[in-house]
Image 1 (cartoon, helix red, strand yellow):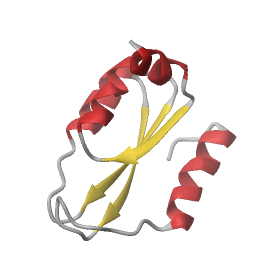
Image 2 (tube, rainbow, N blue to C red):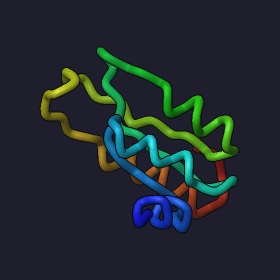
Image 3 (spheres, rainbow, N blue to C red):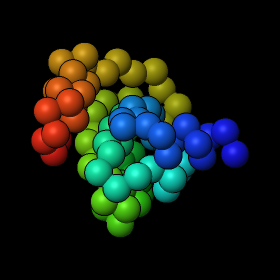
Image 4 (spheres, rainbow, N blue to C red):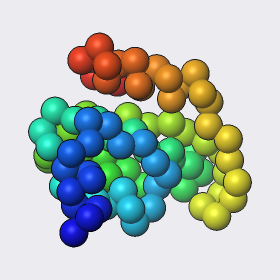
Length: 90
């Protein structure tokens, strides 16, 4: 119940690929979802969810394995945040 409210109230959600991103189904039309996705094991299922809901989807790709450690580019994450604040699509 709490996660549903948090995702529904959020203007933007940023997080790694995984089960918690499934809560994007509770996001409102016009909000933003940015997912950290592996180049090697990309699964774009949350892109499909976002598209059906009218949620803008952005991806920050990394080269790690599914369970590996990875670093995200702060510049790329910042680009998505700036786009959201400016009302643009990522």
